[in-house]
Image (tube, rainbow, N blue to C red):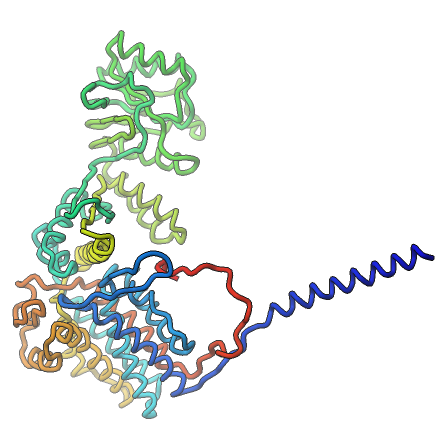
Length: 575
């Protein structure tokens, strides 16, 4: 009887504790209440967020744009003139304002992803289009007809810009044009970027890194660089530099560890018959095989060197295949039913020169088919565009740099960390703008390309007055970039815009840095078509979404979840 009572009490106690646990779990799921606003009120709240964010971003626009200081939760404040960095750092307390601001951040980020520059221009255009759109819808204009009118106007402007674009190719054009302008007039940055492009090619890999000196530096590594040095120091041919240099070597590429000494002797004989040096790239070499190579080098005078294959797992396999394509050889692998006993001279790769040091190997002028190399590069570019994982993108970029003829590292100098960070943002913008210009061509800068596009909209045919209002909104918005650049330089924006529209020279514009009217192209003040086009299309797209919004659902300020978030703050990480 006593045992039964004890068991019953235990069961009740257990049920009671479980109930407490369930209650605690359920109470922690107090979902946030929602606040819904409609019509003009919803759009006005979002417009407030868009306007405040745009005002903070637009101060950075133009050659006399100002810096913005951003407080960080961790670390020192960041000083920048990069529009997308400023936009990402802004978060409002009011939820409705945040909705509008977050959509503008999307515009800046999308423009930055597609063109790499023009984020401030995109933000300024978004503000201009959305502000006028809100007024039009509040006045009773049909939102859908307004949308059609805006889309019609944007299409007409893009067509006009494409006709007026001029392609560039020479280093002088690159230096004078895009790179210098995007770097806010620093000619040194423009010249260094042009030199980098000359060395590694238009599609070569140029990376921007923090430097350790006061001045900017450019470091160019030509050829394919493998992050693996010689297996044994006995392979060294130049004792002064501690490097092994091989002229016109045959290259054996193997994905496994080499342990069979006899099969290796056969490959050595093939190289000796051809009177060529031999480079062996394999997972590793057993001690006997390694000793045999060293012995042949010192006693028979055979020029030979062995290095370990770079990378690990799938990445190693991919690197070996890239090396095979670059040198015109084959990867000796069991997957293709190949082993060292079946190797013929045709399966070995070739190169003009190979330099092997303790830490790395540089292969210059591989003997591979140029067409196959270009196809492989195109595959890697496609993989980079389609990949969503940052790690995969970085690895594809790394492989592309090795295949495309080298990599240039632009080391940004400065007196302090804050200065280096600010200059690094400008160099990155200049690099992206230069690539965009080479891709699609250039237009007169300073916002005048968009300003003169307003003339195309004067005679555009629309079905009704509401659509005509949409065209009128774009006409006014296209004046905003020039107006902002002039205003930031201390000039009268409205006066300059009016004077430029009075004349017919489409290259005539206002040099905000010097405060004079010039031929923008001759003065080297230009913008890439891709940057201008992307900024306008993205700005119009998001502005239309905001303009045609009739209801906004946000978290209620008094009904939010009381459970604190365990996630750390992620400012500066694009979240």
